[in-house]
Structures are given as structure tokens and as C-alpha cells.
Length: 86
Image (tube, rainbow, N blue to C red):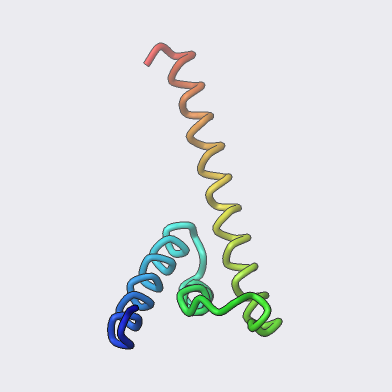
């Protein structure tokens, strides 16, 4: 079992990963930070407030929209490169 210190370090590390991914995905910093903190806390969904659920849902929705947009751009570039013989 993890000690309190180890658990805190693990939670902080998870928070940093979530935050980095949200920021990379185009989510505004303050929303990304709040959502990362909530996710890293690993509370069961039934213990989250409606506000917490809303923040996480919004951050994930924005992240997914950015990711889908980037995938479309990558696909378009690949198609253009293929058609131009690159």
C-alpha cells in the first residue's frame, strides 16, 4: 500500500500529465488545471459535484474537439502529399 507521501506524489504526477494533455489539446489553462486536479484526485464519479463533473466534461469536450480537428488536418495533408507525389 502507498504511503500518504507516495500517494500525494503519484496524484501530483497524474495531475501534471492530465494538465499537459489538456493544454496540448487546446484547453484554456485555468479550466485545464481544475479538470486535471479533479481527475488526479481519483474520486468516484458519484462523489463529484455537478460543478466538478461539468468542468471535467467541458475540458474533455474541448480536448476531443481539438484532437478530432488535428486528425482531420493530418489526413488532409496526407491526401494532398499523396496527390502531389510527395
